[in-house]
Image: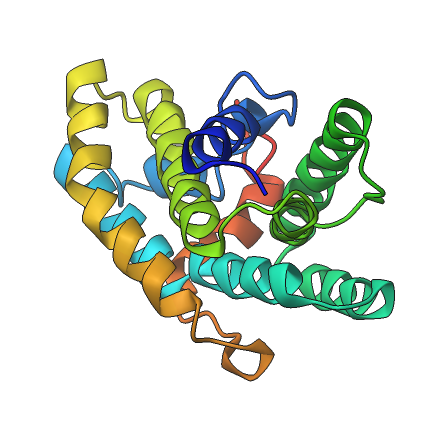
Length: 216
């Protein structure tokens, strides 16, 4: 088993913007929200991001990650991956999780010597964490924080926000990431849900948005 420090360093590497998953190309529907005038400044961005973390697909991703971490067989992982793909509310959101997950699995399998097939992103992270003995709570918390940080980076280009405003939003939402990580440990597949309807609809509307910078 890795030490606590080794585990945190591994997770920091996996969930860093430098890890080659292509996360910089996706906005999770944020680009539509900005284009249609619903996210216009640091405050409205923070509200939108909190909803995604608390009620939206980030919450669902946490449930999928936790279930993948607990899964005992390849068949369970395959079933979770199928559910993760089906749960995506739009073609772009499905591509976002599938393409990032495949890239994560490819690099992580090569570097850490894991048997890790292409999987939806949260399923791939949860499975890799279990195979390498990384703690579930830390994996969940850092995964959710990486989601928040990635979307803040997108907001800097879209809103636009200054670097200080964007980082301030992430800092304010860090306790929410920790709470959602704690909650997700007690949730199972029957708890899989998303109630951030506006964010989901924005992700669907992005498919026809022109011009655009992001793939979702």
